[in-house]
Image (cartoon, rainbow, N blue to C red):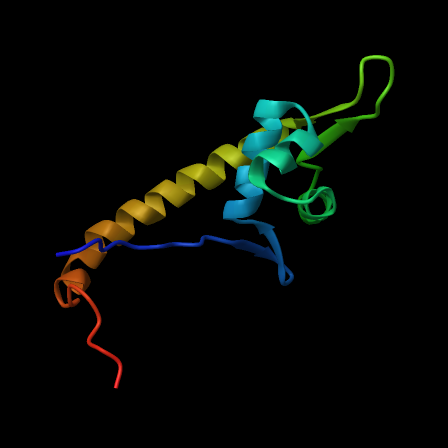
Length: 122
């Protein structure tokens, strides 16, 4: 059998807006590691504008902001996750892992019916 697997995209919605999903979780992780919104965006290959739009959406969807910023000065600006941001990021990763594990276990029978590769197009 060739590579077979599940691709799950877990998204939590807030009135149609994606409050958290894989890309936003990656951005939260990158902000936590980099301490900078622009550096986090660069790490993920996002434009500065896209990075800020994702943060704005997250900060509007939760009871409290997930990302806090410090404006530049002599030492420069920065960003960090708020306590809620840290909890949301950790809980999202836990749900993501549990969903993946459940899909792998439940999907084994389904995958047994899968061909090694698709039939040629007609």
